[in-house]
Image (cartoon, rainbow, N blue to C red; front, side, top):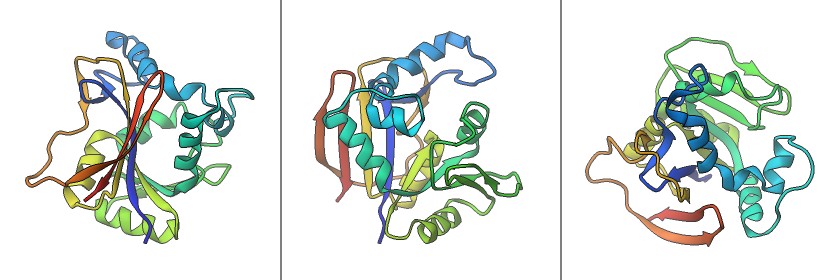
Length: 209
């Protein structure tokens, strides 16, 4: 069966996103610079640049190989409405997922087909239904819980997350959206499977025990 995994960047103080991060409020508490520092490790990776059509060149090596292997394993993505809303205005026409994307929302909306293999499906029946549909479409490939934090927490509470892939960046936000809040007891148990040191982030993969 395909695996369910989380793949995110995280600040040292456990924030996935800085406070006030919305596209309609770009100057709030300098969130853009904070977000840029959090994700600096990936921006110059060759595979990432090619996938988003940023141009040729970029860094190669173990971190680039990690980005490639992560992207190539994904057969479906799941995200929340907040993440979709923020991305809808800035993603290129050929959205960067190239898989079905299941959006958890109360809004009723027809599927949104984009060039390059991405189709957004808007799921009104909760996280379990979204995961069921994602498993059907992913086949033997894996399912990424893309975010945001509340959606990841829902799937952690359901006990269905097999792996956490966290890029821990040496930045402090001091506020924002925390990853590990609102978790039920007892929480899921993980062990460290891999650690990869990079100059701008430490990449840790945890697998469920």
